[in-house]
Length: 352
Image (spheres, rainbow, N blue to C red):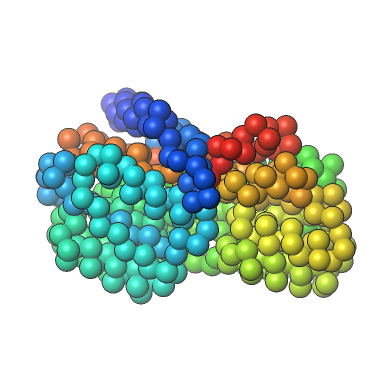
């Protein structure tokens, strides 16, 4: 009972902090940061972890050095917004921020994290490239008693309150289910579906796939998955893979892309095949980028489930609370909105 009360109190604190952050939204424009809302915690799960349990060195948050390890180049709106959110919040909180980018190289990310520690980082925020493979870096952080907050991708076999403090991110299975529900609505519940899978080696791809298929099995049995292939979360690969799949399976009437960049590539490929995206071939995706939401307005995309990348306020408030002695749950799930033809025009300006 006491554990449940602690979790409830922690979630209330996290939600209040993130809602406060909404009063200072990030700037819009061509940078991809968008003017939309900051993250809000929707659930907290797992045992809580205190600074004593973790064995972390207690430092004054205002004097802390925060290291941020980004997994991929800032070449798409999600990564641009994520890095900018961390940067903006560190500046707002007055803490020193060190940044490294692994450019989709797992070995480089391990080296990056070790380098941040060598530079004096005493708090770490890590966006893991893969769900496995970071253990040497986590061991290095533990040896220096440095807490690690992971964001946007989960670590599969690492142990919370030992190898890392907490994971902050979306419910990726639920995202897949919501995308499937949008596709059922857009297609009327019948058709042949191609899935553009995300990058291999991380839980985002696995969970978005399983959620989508589980929903179809339960409530979309008239939709049949006839092809699935990785588009590696990139627009170029999404286009080329969709071109190949449409040639091999001309019966395809719907595409589920596990991120917006692949969906935008698929739209180009569908148009190039002489068919109309959004009409002849329905398209749904996950992310919530401004270009994809605009695609709904334009009629080329049928629905988008958001995956909010604005981690700065929640990541920083979590570290601050941890240093102040509060127990942090090992998973903090954020709320994600949804875009469809009914709200896209009103919401596009706030997308990232």
